[in-house]
Length: 165
Image 1: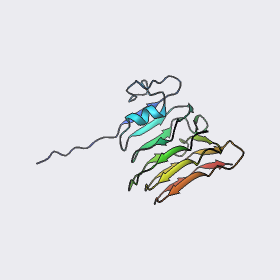
Image 2: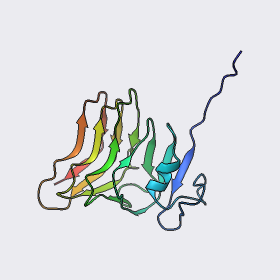
Image 3: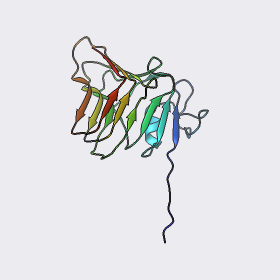
Image 4: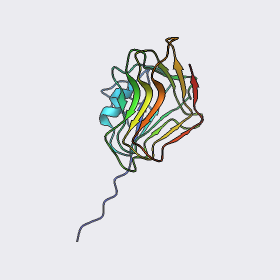
């Protein structure tokens, strides 16, 4: 007989002002400094809580199945500066019933994009993804491809978001 094991999702913390990516990032007083650092240690279904600050991805923040990433202080204080990057957040690779979450009502992000951006948020072949409470700004004054792009995905929920062209 096999023993049943339930793996619990862990909470991972990020603070731009005092975090360090060499921390364990599992407590509020030992956070990662970057979202990339938190994503590197995250497993499926984990939760990442991002503190106020400006975060600049070198490439798309790619989310694992079921990962939830939310801002602690909301979109006015937590900024993803994705200018010069093709995608801010990406959810890829055909996860069925993925259920990844980017932001929640009053716990979303401001995502800055420019003409080099294909999308602030890109979902490709992943189902059940939610985007809530985010503000997306195109800072270039010219058109980017799209703020939120969904390709070959079902049951995606988009609510409480605002897009500024």
